[in-house]
Image (cartoon, rainbow over all chains, first blue to last red; front, side, top):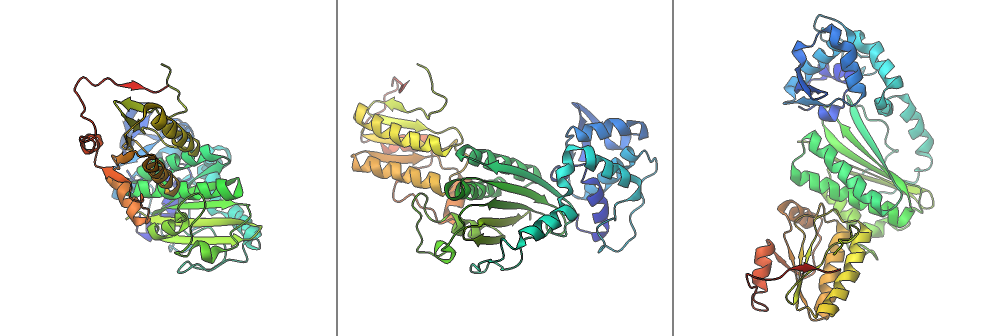
Length: 289
Length: 133
């Protein structure tokens, strides 16, 4: 979805629909039955809603079909028989720009559905980030990596998020496997999938090795620049000698000492915050081109 | 023979060892594999070692370093190691991350790895294959 005018609709519906699956639709695979979206009527609304809450997968064959698909789904869910008119507001006011026909449904689903964790784009996360701001106040500049406040919820049209807790080394394998799956569904080439899986593996291993435990949050970012974002957070000892770790001369005891450096090289965005004694947070993003 | 699910099998093929890695490697599997390989080298008096990584999911810096270590340890024990079947996507990732396997020999696939050993041992068609315990 590149046209700003399309964003509100995506934002509204992505609460229901896994947007990472939303690259591809035409056929809905509704409990093994393939249904054409266009053939669904208002009477199918409850069934579709239930299916979505169960994790219904949408397959959209090309991005241009996304909008039409979203409209159809909105129509079916909300019981409106007419196609949803396109939104008219300017593209800047993202919040509250959900299409009115499905707004209440979206919110209801947000309260009860499994996708409630996706409400990250909202205020809750902003508060959380603000609370963490002081922890990461001592951000350290690494080469070209930007130094700025901890990540605020980005102004993207929609996101899908997966959190993998990292407690021991087996979670490293889990995290990179899930990450690769997500990348695959988003349409990344297998070369990039392997790169991202490798990055996730590096970040997760750093958590296990140095902090003991933490978590990896993987986010499918849609919007103007769709991409895959990985956020690795821990409350471990931090990296006291970050400049050294990121320099060419560094060699770690266990790995090759190139985990973070290699990660920075391969990703489109790389940011690291560390606070000795207060944990480390690494955010990387790879664009879906 | 029972195949231990928590281990990478090591196949003895005449006097060299074949290690097919067909699973996602956890750190524990990797370190177990290091121990198993060195023990197997001594036990069968191996002269060559082929590690087939065609089924591996990723090679991050830890896994790469471990494979390199295995190759270096084997070399010190007089055993030549060939890592076979690094898939092109993984190879590109290794290059981009500046990961090197430190001089351990590689081969496109298992066949060419076996060819590299042709001067050490001739693989007969009726080669008997069995797995280590």
